[in-house]
Image (cartoon, rainbow, N blue to C red; front, side):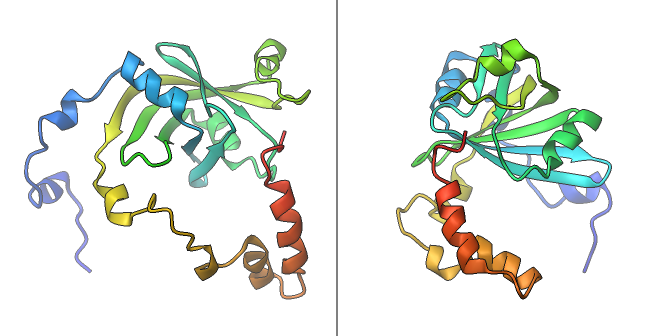
Length: 200
């Protein structure tokens, strides 16, 4: 395998970036980007830490992020598996990237910025749902944001409406592969109940 080791080698393989790739970049939330974020119920949060990188899916039954001002978003950390990979990374290295998706849309919106965690009662209380509060809230300061070209989603046909889940392993099957005496079927039955929207 030929390994590319310099930026010059890399850039020699590609044409110049199209001007629109830079024109679309914003350093704060514009009205159009606000419209997108407020419509998005799903975001991928990417972080980096001493052990490496992490990408974590985050979802909600309404907007997955709350816009605080033109430079700031907040994302509640709802109950999960308590691995805390992303949160540990943010505590040690605040660099984050976000990728917001909207069902049926071929574009995605990306944000690069920095984040901190807070357990401030006033902040966590602002996300109260059904009497439940997030343990922490991720506060993101935006450095740049832009929409991503639609080609990747169009090629993958991810929004074509077909259910392809029967061709891939279940959560229980993944765990059973790691631990042969694990009851994967029972786990999947319970997991389906746990994964319902009332996760708070």
